[in-house]
Image (cartoon, rainbow, N blue to C red; front, top):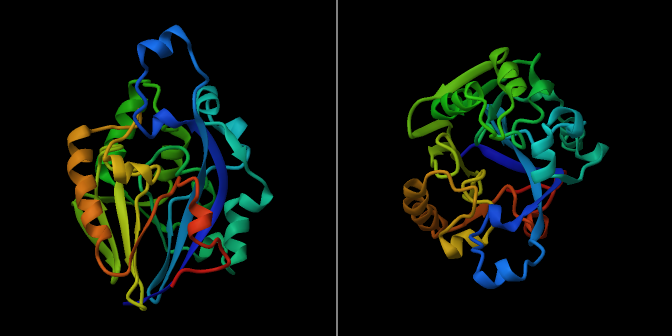
Length: 269
């Protein structure tokens, strides 16, 4: 395979009620004696894949000036708890010797605002942006209906000015060793990224199909479950893929992500 290196970029942390990620039923006792909700800080990351035929960016993290770009409901439900100059996309790319114009492809796991935050940075350099057409349709419909969902119109307007490549199939190999699989579950157009390196290591990037590692044990998701049928069947598929030799699963919002994998400028091979 022709993937030489993978870099994981650190875009800070957001906080959320754990029940967004894992089932957390309220009991009668809880209603009589309410307890504080269980909140958790989760990582925000993107990844750069070095391939002999191009440089690929998976997701784009959160924006700078999030308080001015995110609606108040998003700031209340998913507040940013760690973000500095170092976490900006351009500065993360600089750590590995890249500039925004060096990126040839952007793959978006889905279009929620914590995955599309730095799109504007790439608007002028015009990389090919791959997103599933189901995700585009769902995002546009929800925005048109004015639903309280974590899609931003400004992100979709930026996409209109870019070289967007709608993925219409359930499987796509964009370069040798770089595969996309429609997984759904969280949103209709959520996709997995599977990368096989020249050292025969496999890395599966879950996007938000999986938010926290415990989901793999419970085979269940909290309030962020979109389609139960897709989720309950395809999580078994993911667990089967995980059993392949030399295979690692990288969960974008894993609270312990940086205890498991190195940050850029260190690399995965």
